[in-house]
Length: 119
Image 1: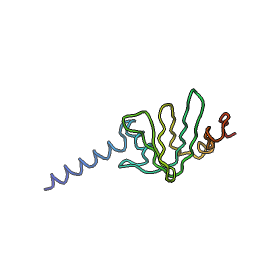
Image 2 (image 1 turned 45 degrees about the vertical axis):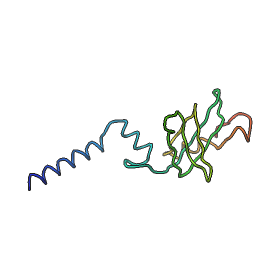
Image 3 (image 1 turned 90 degrees about the horizontal axis):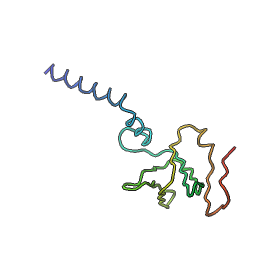
Image 4 (image 1 turned 60 degrees about the vertical axis):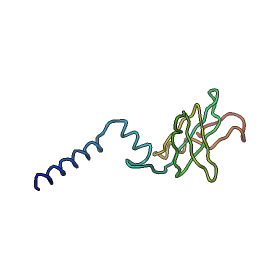
């Protein structure tokens, strides 16, 4: 019985050591989802490009942005709208408030003109 308990303790310690200092891919995956198990919402900046120009910038608070399966796109919900962005896009999960403040919401179809970043 003592050997079984010792074995289980060693197995648990080994498992936790792998979780804590796993490969870079695991660390990136945890940062992306916000948790090791499942997924959590977070703050995101989603930038959609077309022809090298910024077409859309979404500043999303407390949402879940995920990679579109079998595609190069991303998907998320804003209110009752479900948005899918494909092609040339950049998604930033915001941790540092300084990053959040560098961007402003922008949509070419409504504003026109060139995107101007926050100074």
